[in-house]
Image (cartoon, rainbow, N blue to C red; front, side, top):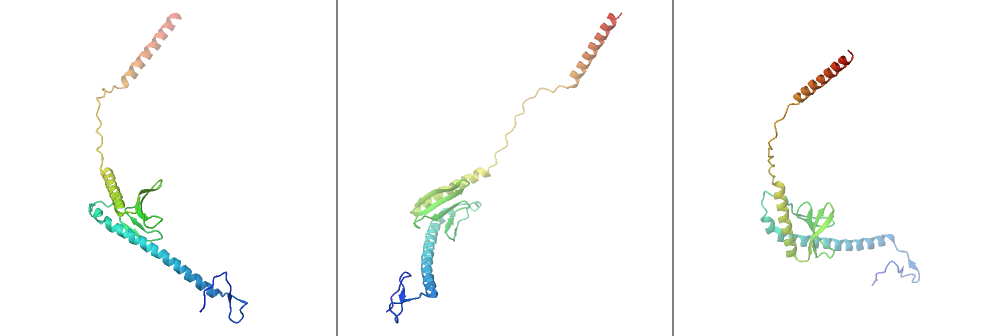
Length: 191
């Protein structure tokens, strides 16, 4: 029976018991590939578990979204699969699994960064948080859709506008009379 050796232990051949047998690169690559496949299998299993938990939560949210009127198209719920699976509620809010892969994290992306709206291992707590979020978003939509009536300007009674021509004419006549008076005085003195 052959025992597995580690990289630090040199393999010996059966013919020369004291001589280390050279480690073949092909064998080392094969062992490395097997180890990587084992790690990848664990990662895939974890991702599948995350997706399964998100699907359970998605099913629990079905009654809530069945009550949202069809004319409201704010919400686009769905599970995205990738490095981090997410259950999207709308464009800015989603649910992902926490570090322990059993805790739900309901987060919202804002212009100031990501904020955690709710975090729990319990599906019912997250469903309540999503229900509150959906209600707030629907109220925000209603406020955005309502066009406030334009304020009616009260027409204040303006005093009648005077013509600017008459003060000009009066000033012109007064100036001409003053010049005429100065000219008459100058003529009387020179006489």
